[in-house]
Amino acid sequence: MKSSFNSTKSIKKLAIANRGEIAVRLISLCKEMGIKPVLLYSAADKNSLAYRLSPEKICIGPAEVKQSYLNISAVIEGALSTGADAIHPGYGFLSENTEIATACQEKGLIFIGPPVNCLELFGNKALARKQAMKCGLPVLPAYTGKNSNTDELLEEACKIGFPVMIKSTGGGGGRGLRVVSSEEEWPEALASARRETKSAFGSSEIFIEKYLPSARHVEVQVFADASGAVFHLFDRDCSIQRKHQKIIEEAPSCLSQAIKQEMTSAAIELLESVGYLQAGTVEFLYQEGKFYFMEVNPRIQVECPVTEMILGIDLIRAQILTAQGQSPFIQKSFTPRGHSIQCRIYAEDMKKQIPLFGKLGTCEFPQGVNRRFDMGYESQDEVPGFYDAMLGKLIVWEENRIRALTKMKQALEETIIFGLKTNINFLQDIISHEAFIKGEMDTNFVEKVFLPSWKEEELESVDPKIISHLRQFFSIRQSPSSEDLSENPFNPWQFFN
Amino acid sequence: MTMRNIEVPDGNQFFRIKAEEENNHIWFHFRGRVFVINKKIVKKTSASEEKPEAIEQKSVLSPMPGQIVKVFITPGMKVKENQTLVVLSSMKMEYTIKSPVKAVVKLIKVKEGEQVTAHQELVLFD
Image 1: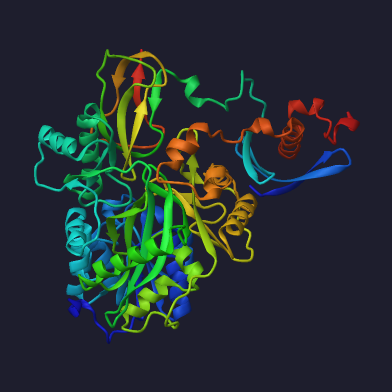
Image 2: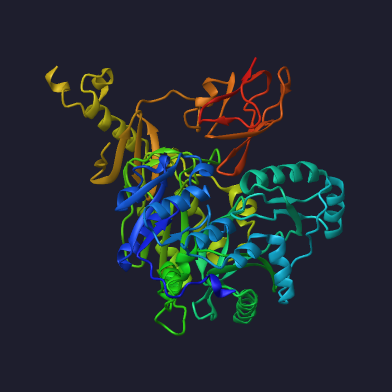
């Protein structure tokens, strides 16, 4: 199983098949490690922050993801033509794609990720579930059969018992998921899940699983080094989600030591059973003292920084070292310290619930002790309308959870993003919410508890004299001859008239 | 577009505010929050911000670039407020576009499978 792993090859040039903050991070890490980075970018990302930072880059296609970031032959061609010896796929896009991993193997490129057989297995959620069952991991009741008839599938859903969740077999990133709470909702939910699944993953294959309405999302970070040793790097809680997308993540989770131990052993056992290599995450749902296997993400994740913060490690450096056959970490055993929280910052209109694109104004990400901004954009950058609108992530560390929350609150207050509305107000209000502070949250907290009573702080809360002062300040600067100057008490010209 | 540090007098003190103008808007950061206002005073009834949709209730625009995956209406159809008109797929997530008003559908300007840009007209009302 480990034949795909070439332990003698050292990476001199690394092709980065991604964009945004993860590309920025990879470029900087490459420079740090003495590796030459090559950015594989789409036409929409010309002049992006990653583009400006990378000494070498090559355009792999137009803006549409299918023709660039998801275009396997263009990515491989780009890496080969620039003389790269490895490809890092980041997260999303091709990170879990079996075909690109196979193509890399054929072309003599190192794919920084797990072996093809692991990608194959975990890329299929139904197969992954079967493997987990084989290893004795607890799973939720489900239907993973081949039946695709709407009525017969409904029968299966009834057998499991509503609410159920329709999941995409090739899924990931919260796409194609539908919670169905009654028979009446079934036909439209199934159709829409299939459409989304088809457009996201190219296949409309789905399966049905029992849905837990008040579960926590807890996951275990696992790492398998070049010697084949599989170990865990503790757990994270990612229960703060909206539309099945994680927004706030933290490490460690607040589960009891006993449960954590069970969970981490189960995660290791599962990955050992398939000859895993590299970084991976085993995701679980936890409800009322019990945990259930959900899926494995065979790649680096957006939320890996919270683990890095409590352990003082760099998971992506560890991946690159492992790909070169070296040991990933210096420390031999890991002791988590303190608490870390990450907030994902999006360009988003929270009222209309839509992502926003366009040009950013001035941005300020003030540094501080144990405060880390992993950003994909800078002031005046264009956020292209073809991709995820995540601008970056803010990560903090403190000695305990309450202090980490306070630090996050302060860091968010000092963060300035002009030009496009963001979800920062929303993040600020979640981390100040009583239930969240107490750690009492589940995957439905945002949609069922928080949002219904949430009101974004409005302009009305700002002293009107501040607003009129600002209007006057800018109207003087812009147009000294404009008509409203006559009633402007700040008008420097009024004394001359 | 440069950020300015502005002092707004408040009794014997000053509020120190970072602000920047961009086209017709002023963005400012105050007490840990970012706000945006129109440069000129817009006459409006109440709490809501400026309403670009309200001006043009004769049509529904795409909020973002994407692909039309499903059209739920036909010309001549009467639609209620909040009734689903079309489903747009953007960045692989589906967004349901609902009618902002009670109206009669005059023309559907897009087909299933069609790529649309942000602010493109999707549906016209009578």
